[in-house]
Image (tube, rainbow, N blue to C red; front, side):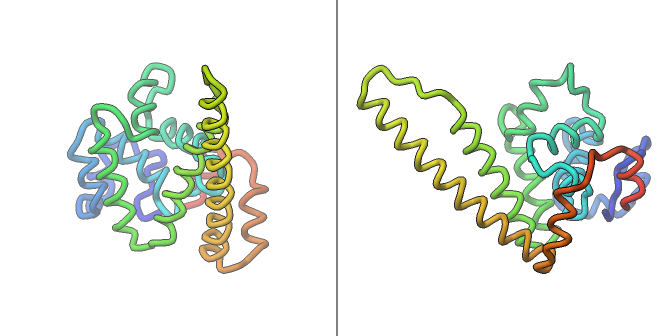
Length: 193
């Protein structure tokens, strides 16, 4: 990572003077919860972040990124839920910070992976919700929607497989080793950079 936030207790701008010129990170540093949000963006959306290798599930990765960034998982649930889902009072700020940072990395493939993973897990969440229909017609329509969501999930999954093959240069051994890695520890994050 160009700006490894692990173990940085001081202001990120003091540790990394060039961080101010990176779109997305500059915006995050100028907004609310600047240090934590910037660290979260680095852990979650940096192309070289080790979290993507250790936590393939985006929901787990978001929680780990927030924890490492210094957010209080137990007491900041509402704020974090908004951050994870890009909703709430700061939704526009979150989206701009993340999208500008993804663009600044100049890797469309990585941006597509991030977008597709987010969409896939949003669809997955909808698929797991029970059908609640008063009439048979509503039930049939709800089931058709779920079927379409499953089909879309499958298509997204196939696209993600292709994106990861491109990202890893078609090296199946690298892809398999990413999946087999064990739980990430703070020491491993520090050593990874």
